[in-house]
Image (cartoon, rainbow over all chains, first blue to last red; front, side, top):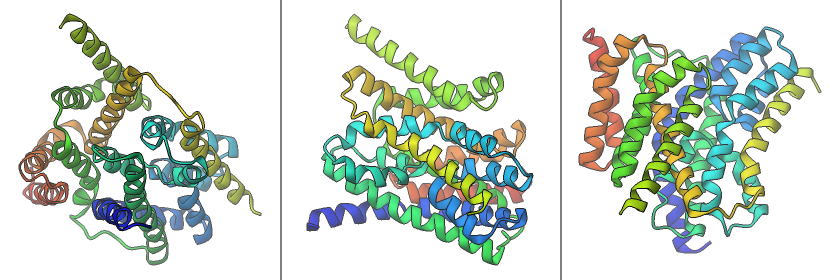
Length: 233
Length: 102
């Protein structure tokens, strides 16, 4: 590993610190929920390791506790995690020259947070640099995710009263801070504002699918408008 | 192997397939398609901000202290260029405002 590679990895790891805090809080709650639902530590740890997606794990724990059917649990996980395909499609061109044998295990580390932190800071990096930076973000984040699950399960840590609001706010605050700090392009800023403002409307029309559907509509509209604008000028 | 472990492995496989298939396709997309993916990812992140903001809160509260704290987060991020500092400011604001009964 060259000095430059190590520096890029460290840079990614530093950027992952807030993600680690967020993951730790979320997965502690996940561990507590799994404990209450009667799952063993090995089962919930395995789930965190192979799924690595809290929005799909919380409902799965509920379904498993209620004696849900395997097809129901796996299908709901698939649907909830469909966003990973979109995230992967976005990342794939950036990792174009990385060998598939290396990419395949690394793909397991894609989550909304690791994607967002990496993607927003990908500018002016080589394909190799982008991949190392992604690993720098993703490996510590994944480790914290697993550690948080175990800590939550074993110690049943309760969040002190009055701090729930702060914990809930970590994720949106972090994504907002990243967007505000990293975005320069006027079109991208307008697009982000439009997507944020239209999400509640689309989500109310198509509950459960609004986030993805709204993103597709807004992104498609933006590309069409941009193409039209370029053709005019 | 217990039934629950098999279900959990099935969940993992379903999720992994979603993660890996874009890389297996080895895409060579038109620049316009890559631009669309770029916009799509930003839109998804923005949608997740809304989701995180509205989670567990009725609209008036969301528009109240959480909205104010989110605005503060964005302002601090724009001026300081530090996501960590901005996040800290936003979380502090949301804790203070929620305790003040906003």
